[in-house]
Image (tube, rainbow, N blue to C red; front, top):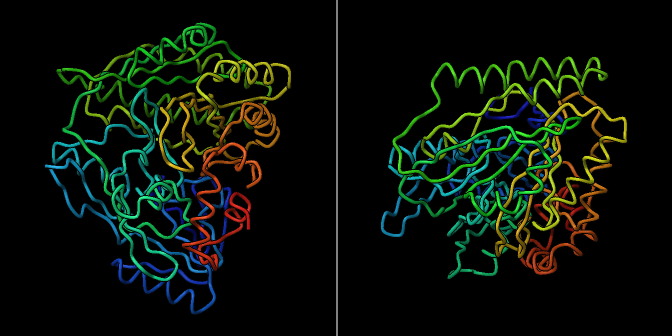
Length: 439
């Protein structure tokens, strides 16, 4: 997986292969001043502006035919404040680099998602999250951010400074300005023990509330066409570290999860009839295992098998019903679903357009192998998710629009009013934002 998702001859493609676009020009600023100048210049030239990270969104949220800002040179840690326990990092820094740099300093984020190829600003702006009982998304761990607005001015936003912008810009969709630096809360590095084990889906659903309550981080993968899941519980540990052995790690994470899995996907794409059989074999291939390591080595894993994904956040209490409906739909549909369904949770937060805004949430992510028709499956799944007032991940496939969001986000109007104030001429507009935020 490349860390950037660009193509030749000025065309840009995202990681999932769902978006291709040709901007009028690409700018790679080496400083915040250069970025602000590029924004002002674009406005003068009558061109729209979008910043693009590593292209891990499946939606066209970063697409533009105007000026495409690439933040590759805006990387690295600006400052570590050990008294306040924060780290300030440039917006273009990949999560992977941040995690490794923090570990060297004896520090860690509290929670993170399972992929770390994204840039910090791309990941937070789209609401990227992991799973957690008390700890929320990456954006919920932000203490301050720096934003270049449509007139080229640079704002610092926190709970004390520009608090109304801070409430919205942590998950800002690129609609309020371009994030140039982010200050995250950090803590001294700690150990997590991961316990992975297969469990029947019926048992997971019957005990879901308990599993969520008893573990700091609980998630599971359900294999459609089977009654099988693989569960993962991550909890803090006093140690000692017991990392996954190199051979075992290679076998489970590379050979099974990427190599054999990829071969199974190719087979399922070519011969859809074998998908249920392959699912039964896949879902029993992974055996129980336990290991203890520093957070990013437990939370994240490589994703070399390319896919397309839709993910919705439903109210936590609606998870069991939603998943039962999803299972019934797959069983009666004749669909051949060749990818596991991932389920995670997050506590309510106070960010206007966070998928966990003001409600404890459960996330259900449906995937299909890249190149396999996914529309029928995603359409049927989306019908179920929206019936439960689901909120789609901003960076993943969905068909919702501003009217829908006004109904499922209590603070939607607050966000759009702020956008009217910060970007009245819609310098940061594109087709995706026109659909999800309205004109």
